Length: 339
Image 1 (tube, rainbow, N blue to C red):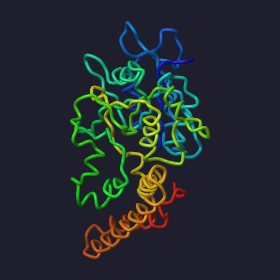
Image 2: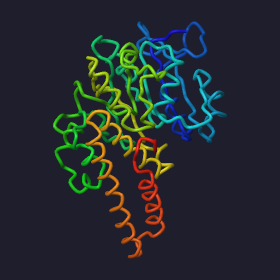
Image 3: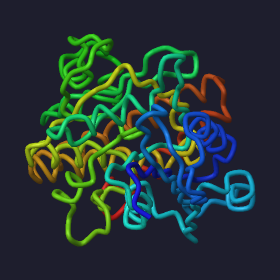
Image 4: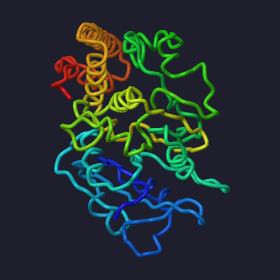
């Protein structure tokens, strides 16, 4: 049956976090009066909306597939025999969903309730209440309740050299990172942004359909296995004339990186190769090749530094692990085929 909101969660070996995430949704919703087993209502009692939740177990090997059906019978479980990646996993569930609005939510999140309302409803209304808005993102918080940067400007040609790189760590107040993270705008009021972090993105299906690439079943470009896919999607939405807004009154706790930290080398490869792919897609092959070569040079420098620290007796096992991971990055070449 058609619903107002489809919540899509792609998970990989994080059952404990996924369970907490689903508990938070359960606390903000209630069973539908008509008895539809996988439909729930949320929002004000006088004018509620309906939702469905679809979880994609993305080739995981934990307890998710065994425990989820009994604990959360109102959740629709889809299983993939292999890890499709964030983009293809979301596209798979998107094609099976029916909501007029779609909430892409990470499993390592919890949607926060308030005495006078709740974050799910506030985020939903930020999009549903304004026909010019194609997507909204909440204010993200770390586990200690500190603010996690979640609203962005689009990257420039030089951003990739200074954001999440060794050079950026040496010059943390560089203008490219500050611009990207909107350090000149407070995080306490609602405003239009270029893009929002992919951990929690609530979008209008009509907008997603307008920018969906015909070769894919959903809105994400599957050339990005993970990372940079949300900035690419938001750029296509903005280019099509849709607004993207930041809604700070909607709060979502994000226990960042719990899936990707299980595979350190793959995380480095996918993060940086996706960054190069994004630059190639929007700024051309010349800038992409310059960034690729720079990033590889960075990892060579990191190997040299780790070797020196190991020789001095500093955390030798850790240094050996890092060197092995960085060597895998170099072997990949950070090309699209490594995704």
